[in-house]
Image 1 (spheres, rainbow, N blue to C red):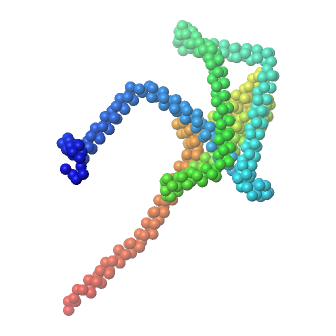
Image 2 (image 1 turned 180 degrees about the vertical axis):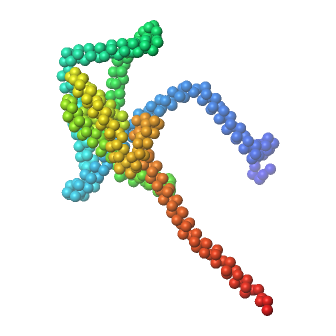
Image 3 (image 1 turned 120 degrees about the vertical axis):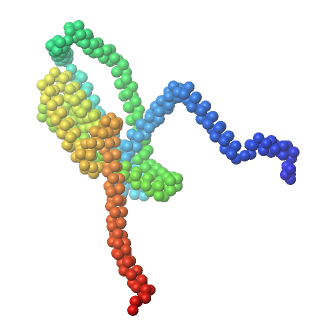
Length: 436
């Protein structure tokens, strides 16, 4: 018995030693067995409750997306508006407005920029709403009746052409009638779902407005507290990651910021040129409200695929309401030419100059991004291509520096190797006696 140990403690230690529980090997095996049992129980429960878990994860993902959408949009808007805020801030400092309070001057700069942007958005949205309202007011029942009659006659001719083509290819009349009946059923079903589509549209508009308000508030907070947030996260990441890792992370963040800001700058320039081109072209063709259509097209052109949809839809609304089918056909051809030139020549060239990537790389990146991720993939494809190009060039420069360094060391080593036998020969000759 150990000194100071009671009989109960001694008996407990004897029992533990008897069962081998104080053996390190048995303890390790026991821990593995317990961990394996816990993992098996978890796997079995996951398999049993997989639908409920999937539903819970889907709900959690929806909540995360609902939170992240305004946060990401507000952050991107703050990044885009930050150069304007810094310029206004420096201008206010030069003219002597609030020179003793940097924080107040910065807040005033944020307020000025936000009010200017909000005013521009309000003017544009009001102009678009006025265009839609005036278009609806200008609708006459005679034009609508003419348009409906034209569509009805066109559909009738199309059905007759399909029927004749199918019969000439050897199809039976029963099969043709069944196919035409299926088409008519599709059109009737689409018309029956109109109420559900309208309800979904109202829900989408409500979500859009709420996200816009939240994103605006978040953008203002980011712009006001940008320096404080940057200093806080700089200290936090530096303390958690270390100086070396934080330096690499900061370099990567600077590269990402430069690539995305360059891309957005190029997109804004392209949207401006697209809006001007559409406005001038539709004005020449004599399309009503050509200026408003050009403005809407330029704004929509900031997002892939949205600009062409806005241009064609607005032009169709403006021309078909007035039953001006000839102008509509000509304007569609003009818009198709403009979209082709912009998509294949102008947009890749502007983006290549903004992110310093070749236009062919821009075109390939847009194609790959569209195939992989759709609209979002096309939005991030060019900045990602710019990042790949930046790091590829750094890798090439690093390899070139290593090869040049090896090249500089090579001749020195060769000269030493070449001189070594001569030195050895002299040494040997000094030690070997002469054969006189």
